[in-house]
Each structure stands twice: as C-alpha cells, then as structure tokens.
Image (cartoon, rainbow, N blue to C red; front, side, top):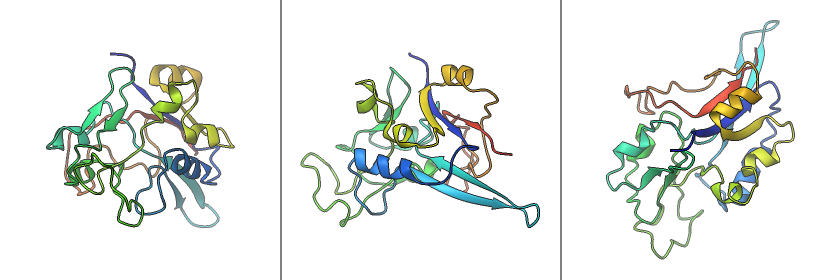
Length: 203
C-alpha cells in the first residue's frame, strides 16, 4: 500500500475567510443545504486581557483506521490502496446514518430534498452519504484539492503525511477544537481512528 495521504493545516495562517468551503462546494457540486464537506470553526479562549481566538478548518480526516468503515452494513465505505483516502460508494449506501454516529469528527454528510431534488439513477436511497473525497479527481490530473488551491493564506496542504511532516516544521497531531478521535459523536468510546491530519498550532 502507498503512503497514507492527509491534510496539513497551519492554524497561524488561517484568517477564517471560508474560501476553502466555497471552493469545496463549487468543485464537488455540493448544493446549499445540510451537507457541508468542509467546515471552519472559530474558537475563543480566555478573557480580556488574555483572550485568544483560533480557527479550525476541517473536512474528512481520511483516518488510518476509520470508525465509519466497519459500521457500514453494506460495505459502501472503503479506503483506496493508492493513498489511504476514505471514499463512499453512494450507489449502495442505504442511508442508515451508522457512519455519521460512529465518526468522531462529523465528516459523513447527508443532503435533503432541497439540496438533492433529483436522486441518482443508480442510488439505493434518495440521499446517500457524502463527504470530502480529497478531490482525488483533481489530484489525478496534477491539481491540489479545491480547498488547498483556494486558500489565500496557504494554510492548507495535502499529500503523503511523511512528506508533509518533513516539509513543515513543528507539526502536531491535534489542536484546540479538534474532537477526541476515540469518542464518537454519540459520546461512546471507540478505538482510536488515527486521523490523517497534522497541524501547525497557534499558541
């Protein structure tokens, strides 16, 4: 298997402009609605005069051991051998939401009748799970993921994690605002998922 790919995020550079969200939605034709593949969270800590603020831009973390994969009853979720990216086969998803409940990071997304008024001809359900694909289609023609390419502050990058760790100094595995990767959205303990995400932390 090829090296695990993942995201790098420089929290010191991010201005919270949300260009990454717009670019992601545009490239992947994600209509306005409940499904948002990439989210930017603003976090405040402390009180004046010692107040601090942080941004966190996050999509699917393409975990090394994703919690969403084993809970899918129809094996619609899988990891690509070539880069470890986690994808979903929307044609066989039964919209049971088990992946959504298992994921610690809220990555699995679901549309509704307004955002997906026309179902795919080969879909089992009207609104199968959708999420960040790391823009594998862009990467196959030498382009960066849409979010990375759109970031004006160059706060995002994507590639083999080992190369990213060498390229960027002082990277860490977690930052303020990142949910624990061993607790599901339901608050249940799960085995650590090992998210494929490294950071430069704002202090």
